[in-house]
Image 1 (cartoon, rainbow, N blue to C red):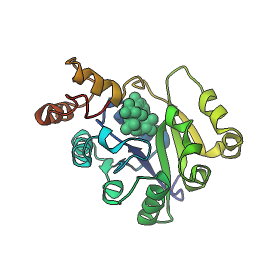
Image 2: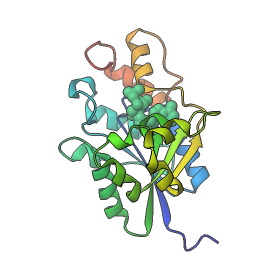
Image 3: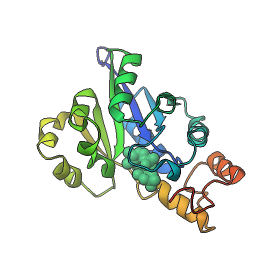
Image 4: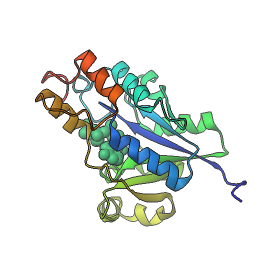
Length: 212
Ligand code: ATP
Ligand code: MG
């Protein structure tokens, strides 16, 4: 039935400092809802909007992303942003992934609705809509209004490429997890066990200067 359709690959970019169930639930829902063949998690090398000293080493963030996704056959992790020098711009990531997967692949960039509202501030923001589809994770019960407003005429122009997706675990965030650990509170049920153990074993997020 859908034999002639291009294959759909999901792309989940992020700092993943640390990766948590919000990211994983959003990716899993996107697979089911849009028939994605694979979701590639792409930890940022140097996130453009964050101070380098406020972000954990790329090696830790990469390792945690691998640990979190290892049991899922359709989740993979790419080093492309980590291995590319300089700030990690999504426009470069998407161009490189499209080149690797080839013209028979459509990329679906998965992002939280919060990040979706800021896309026009990203490098070559408007041109991203020509490069991929967007799956925007929203909180159940909330519609498209927030980021539609932020995107202005772009939202209308590319409405066939912007897909909202309701995600139940949207309240989880990496910053809240870091904050909890620094305060000695538990975060272990907000992320997969192996990631929790990795954080404890390496003493991540305990000190005020590591990240906020
Ligand atoms: P921080 O709190 O440090 O900003 P974060 O939890 O937002 O971290 P990121 O690595 O910045 O995690 O996010 C990567 C991508 O995942 C972004 O597109 C973000 O909007 C999305 N995202 C983050 N948390 C969730 C969540 N709970 N559910 C769905 N998507 C999420
Ligand atoms: Mg964020």
